[in-house]
Image 1 (tube, helix red, strand yellow):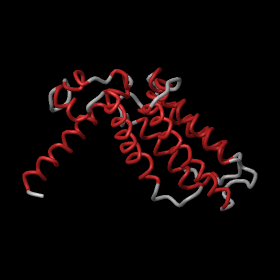
Image 2: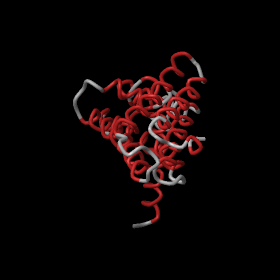
Image 3: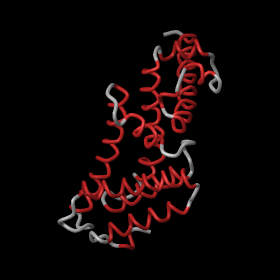
Length: 210
């Protein structure tokens, strides 16, 4: 492959990433349905026809935005927690990383997935399925770490990892939503304390949950 072709591909990939970075920020505030080639052209480095050429259809743009949001989510929530040991320590690291991800407004509208889950919860189609898959992947990771904590004796033997994941996720989502609605940063501290309490009630060592 010659160098000009490589350079064109690199430029195309960079442009696509820049468009998607604008798209996920807009969608976190206004939803995926609000994404159009025209509105993106106002903030992206290329015009409407170029964006249409990159994605072909609105649905393809929405799917690409969900995938890009997953990459950003992984970078800010999953990756930082990987330095903690599997089990309780990593589960708690995930809770803290998620809290910081929402609080710091990695996405302008708070958690991207909270916005689009509500938007697509009663719909059918490829975008709905992509959103569901993203949420299931996150919940599965929480369950896996809770199960590892049970197996290691860090949580009580009769602990249901699925219930732990459900309650933790609900607390984080509530903090995100209330912080946006009320402009109240203190809800993150409340969510952390509630998550800490539910884990301690299941046998966790409070000293691990700093």
